[in-house]
Image 1 (cartoon, rainbow, N blue to C red):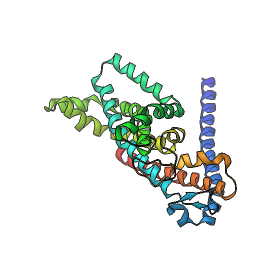
Image 2 (image 1 turned 60 degrees about the horizontal axis):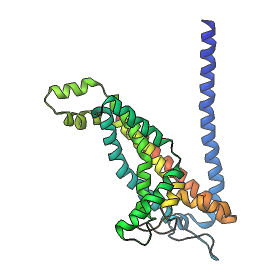
Image 3 (image 1 turned 120 degrees about the vertical axis):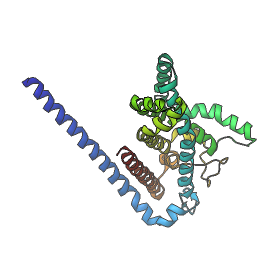
Image 4 (image 1 turned 135 degrees about the vertical axis):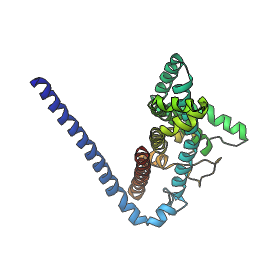
Amino acid sequence: MKKNKIVDIAMRWLFTVCGFLSIIFVIVITAFLVSSGVPAIGEIGIREFLFGTTWASTAKNPEYGILPFILSSVYGTFGAILIGVPFGVLCAVFLAKSSSRKASSVFSSVIELMSGIPSVVYGLVGMIVIVPNVRELFGLPDGANLFSAIIVLAIMILPSVISISQTAIQAVPHEYEEASLALGATKIETIFKVTLPAAKSGILASIVLGIGRALGEAMAVMMVAGNVANMPSLFKSVRFLTTAVASEMSYSSGLQRQALFSIALVLFIFILLINIILNYVVKRERK
């Protein structure tokens, strides 16, 4: 009994330390980004930096407008969510309610495998398969564009959306569905009018993770989006916030390097605000 109490106290302290370390890491990262990024924004001007439409960091007269990066990230993430979430939720419904136990186990293993595939592999497959097909399908000179990036991001967020949505659907009490069926509703009506609304908080949580994955992706997007600092259009080459930092950081210096840290700060704030808003919505739905 005494040994169990000692173990319990030790584990409690371990969890407490880990929790405080997580908070400290977030504070350190935030402080580093603020101290590294704010000076460049002050020198460039916040209006020119956030709303400028031209990025020419290596020109004789450099310009540091990141509006094309912001809009490309927003459009790319929104497009990926628009495609990936409905498909992922329907897959989760199939696995949780329609498939056999053996088929569900096989598909779940495949989904877990997808979540462990490195992003560079997704980018390589997108570059070899999706980009040429987009080019031929729409008769474009180059298939590396925003549309290709949206398709790749939609595929990349599927594992998170499917697995979390499936868990949320399976957690809905069977009594809800039995009551609906007893009142004369069909199985499909029960799923879409009872089960999915009851699992809404878990599905929203999967969307939060999907948005974080799509916004934070760099390597795969760099390989399929063209990596050109254009104002976003569906079939034009674009550059995201993440790819802007990744593509220039290795050779940057001076104000250019500081501006890249400023982009990282904008991305950090962007993701933070989205997570706060969506977490608030999730908690409200749970209540």
